[in-house]
View (tube, chains in turn red, green):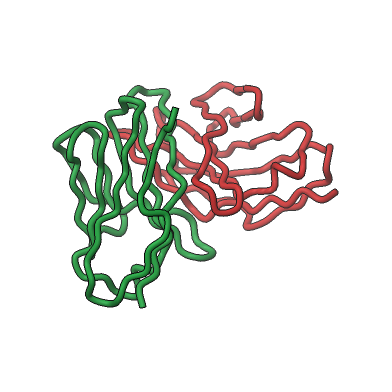
Length: 110
Length: 113
């Protein structure tokens, strides 16, 4: 599996955009980038995923660089409820295991 | 719509005791997973099952056994619990299509004393 690297923690002001980076320099051609988040001690929650193109849904946007070696999750208008640990995951090419790293702890500040 | 249900939610064991963590999903998913999460760490995959009747080891399988009883249920067994197995355990399921996403249960907090 491609390894991912994320900053340990980040802060964001409420109402501003939160930009969470992820490096995955060893990603293979048909591996997808997934983002999950874990609020407090709950089970992780799926946010978004992508292969090459940028993606947007009701929760967030995912920007993947052209060389696919890094990506950025964007929460356009962060709220206090977005305070969570955010995991960037590269899905294994064969099979469908999800390997989590330690993620980025995002704190949204009032 | 229950999604992924784990039982029990909390458990305290003595060293050497055995127990089984239960997980069931009602989404007709083919794949199921067991993870553990220790303080300050991300989730680590213990075992997974790509389909009914198949299981494979993940990153940290030692000390655990699993059983994919049917398509809905995937159990995790600790034969002889050790303090190092104190953790929060999460079960998850996913469909096996390319654009799949995993759904997680609410976790089981296990303490081994």
